Amino acid sequence: LTSAGKILYNRLETLCNDEKMLKQEIQTSSSDISSLSIGVTMTVGEYALIVPLAEFLKNHPNINVHIHFGNTQDLLKMMEYGEINLALVEGYYPKEEYEHVNYSIEQYVAICAIHHEFKHGTPKKLRDLLGERLLIREKGSGTRNILERNLEAKGISLSEFVHFTEVENMHTIIGLLEKDCGISFLYRIAAEKQIQNQRLKEIKLSDFQMEHEFDFIWEKKSAYSDKFYEICKELISYK
Image (cartoon, rainbow, N blue to C red; front, top):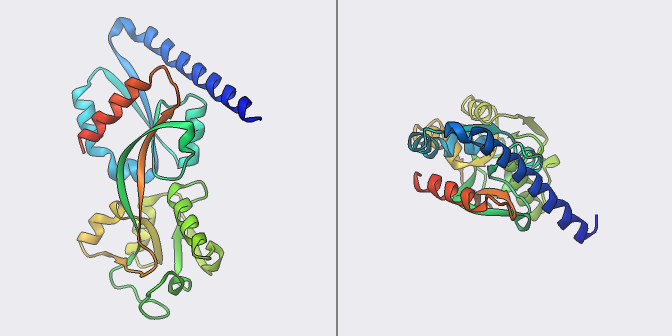
């Protein structure tokens, strides 16, 4: 598509999805019950959104909320097809194509078991970890995409880790880390409890310190933008 064609496609897509939401409103208008579909990535849904979501549900008993899990790329597709109204994502996305509100800024760190023995002594830099087994999320995951981009910036590729295990679930990665099955790179919020209980620890590296945003996103120029913005700000206020 040309740039003009892409703009037209995105606008028509948004109009189509707004129409779906309008039909839902009409169907439920007599019962005073509305619905809201939110997509969340694994890390966000399991570790960052539970408390705000609980408060939102208590304060809005007439809203039926549907929570959908997926990696960042999955959620962008679901939004494109009108399957979700909002998404809370952790990975990279084309910001110019979406309305967005920052939810939080989270530390992204290297993690291992508290008594992990490194193959080549105490690591100082990223390259010192290449001999370790890397526990990594699947392709399309925001957590993985962030790691790939940061490694690339330092001239390192994932293929340089000789041993790796690909896992599609953050809970499983945390469990494998606790069993000392390797190292991983993830948001500290996902492992905070285990770090506090001294089952896991952060691997301090001189060339790897980073933070990344968790953002609410929705379709640009949606007729429901004001409504989605207010919902997002309310959820943020409950953190």
